[in-house]
Image (tube, rainbow, N blue to C red):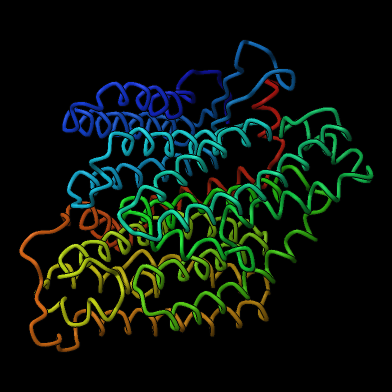
Length: 498
C-alpha cells in the first residue's frame, strides 16, 4: 500500500469542530442552526467517505504531520485501514442521529446548545479514531466526554443530571488512567507516538512502568467501551439521554474502546499480545452472558438495549482476543454492523415512547401500544432479528464470520460458551416485541397521532437488510483491514514516511 500526506484526513475532524463554533452563532435562529448542523455533519461524513475511498479503494494510506513536524516529534493524524473504516462508520451513523434529531419531538433538540454539542461529540470521536499519539487521543476523548455529559444532563428526563454525573465521574477515572499510562510510557520510552511506542516497546518490553501502563490503558478502554465489569455507567446514561444521543452513545461512541484494544494487540503492545488477548476473551465471554441476562431482567426497552450493547461488545472482544486474521475481520464486521443495528433499535424505542400517552420507554407504559404502529413494529422485528443474527440481516453476517473464525482458530471452549450465551439475545428481543406489539393494551391506552419521525431508523434497517443480502463489500473491507493490522510495519512506514 502506498503512503501519502494529505489534508483529507483532517477534514472529518475540522469540519464538525468549526461547524460547531459556527452553529453557536445561529442560536437565535433554531431552524437555520439545525439545517446548518445537519449540513455540516453530512459534509463531514462525505469527507470520511472520501478518506475511506482513498485508503481502501485507491490503496493509499494517509497521514498528516501537524505543523510539518516529522514523527515522532510532532502530532500525527493517521488514516490507515482501521481508523478510516471506523471514522466512516462513526460519521455515517452520526449523520443518521442528526437526521433523527431533526424529526424529534424532544424539547432538548430545541436548546441552542444541542446541535453544537452534537457536532462536538462527532469531532471528539472522529479525532480520537484518527489520532496517531496517545495524548492527542486523550484530548479528543475529553471533548467526547464533555459533549456527551452535557447532552445527557440537559435531556428531557428528570434523571438525566444524575446519569450525567455518573458518566462524568467514571469517565474522569478513565481519564486519570489514560494520563497515568501516558506519563508512564513517556517516562519509559520518551514518546507517545503510537508508531514510535510500538518500535520501542518491542525492542525493550521490560521497562518497570510498561506493564502498569498496559493495565491502565486496558482499564481506560474498558470504561470507554462499557466492557464488563466497567459497564455500570452505561444503562442509566443511555436510558435517560435524548433518543438521538443515546442512539449514538450505545452504537458508535462505545466503539472507541474496541478501537483501543485493536491498537493495543496489533501495534503498541505486541510483546504482551497473548496476555491482553486472554483477558479480552475472558471479559468478552462473561460480558456476553452478563449483558444477555441483564437485558432479560430489565423492564425498560432502552435499558434493555444498553445491556444488550454490553453483550454485543463482548462478542467483539472475544474475536479480538482470538487474534487471527479471520477473527480480526469478524471483529470489524461485527463492529460496523452493530453500530447500524443498535442505533436503529434505540431510535425505534424513542419513536414508540414519543407516541405513548406518557413519554417513557418503560414496558408498562408501552404495553400494546405498538398495535397501532405496525410499520415501526416491522422495523423493530427486523432489527431484533439482526441483533440475534438471523438471515437475511447483517447480524447473520456477524455471527457467521465470528463462529467461522473461532472454528478456524480452534477456540472451541470460548466459542461454545458465547454460542450458548448468544441465545439470550433471542429471549430479550422476543420479550420486547411481545410487550410492545403483541400484548393487548390497557383499556384507554392509545398511540398519540404525532411523534418522532421514522426516516432515520428506516434507512438504517434497510441498510442492514442490504448488507445481509449483499455483504461482499463489507467482508472485503474487513478482510483488507485485518491484513493491514497483521502487518504492523505498514503503520510504522506510514507514520515515519519510510
